[in-house]
Length: 278
Image (cartoon, helix red, strand yellow):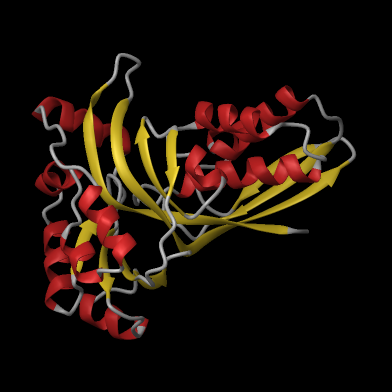
């Protein structure tokens, strides 16, 4: 059964610009795909449609079921499909796993059924599935704004390696946005300095410019995340930040380093050293 890789992302800078009339929030962030992925196995069948996964959410609660249902309804293709999702990206970690699964499965279904949906339709369908889903349809690096549907690709050639630390719990994104609204926290920084540093290959300037508007709210509830961030910087990362609304905290490395060493530094097996996809 053919497999597809649904890559995770991190945020280089994340500004939350306020709640919209439609209930979503405007954001500005650099989304970067990283070398950590879920595996999706797809196989056409004569008629039966089945989905399974090795991690929750199961069944119809998984976004992949919504993708399959909407694809068949919109495309009008006949036949069926068997889909199996093997999870490696933690849910509720701020790494975009579910959104990447949705976009990757959508592209995969469109391909094996002969491209019945054009790119514009794929994008509209992706937007209906979730704010981060459109980014995962194509490209590796982009400035993402609006509610996530305004995507401006970036070309960078600066090798970046990351230490990812999962603290052992997930964070609900809806809660994080709601808590920010209650605190009346709104972004005042933009990503221009990060963009310019990336384009010029200035890794130290880039690392020192990282920010995430969710950090104040999320760390208030989970102070251990501040400890993780401090530890990453103490042991040699040149910058560190929360990804998305959390819970993963990442550190920037000047070059690739031994993952086992970082597991010992952080006192946890839930540590990965990964590269960014160029």
